[in-house]
Image (cartoon, rainbow, N blue to C red):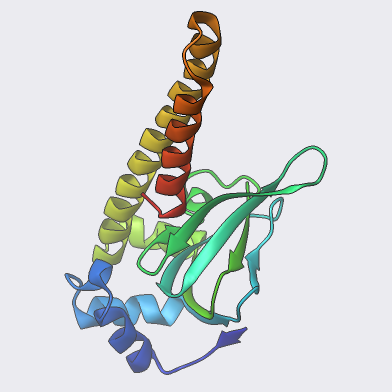
Length: 185
């Protein structure tokens, strides 16, 4: 559900968020003018896999579960994002369809910024675009590290079968990787 608080209340909300603390109030007012603040109830859908990706979302409070469906239609949890994280960043990098669905784990407040508005901020070198790009870079780098760990673990499965190493050690490594993914790290 989208609600329309005053720009000043959105600015005050964003000033309390670590990501935006280096951005002055005037620049946050510009963000508040073009962004949409929404509240999701527990279990509420933010977006669905396969939908057009036309905005990025900043999680103001709460948390979001990301899911994908496999070829048999089974829903698989692929990650979680927490307050302070950016979600749907691919919409501003590569406007393809959504690669996952996003569901509120608890009551959640999000700020949605259209890809077009983000592009205008980028073209102007706006401070909001700069801090979001830094956050996106950090997040994507972390995701690549986690994916590398997953790929390495999959190769270890083959190696352990070949050399007869205990299967349990591989399970422990995969469990540790999954714990890191679920915690957002």
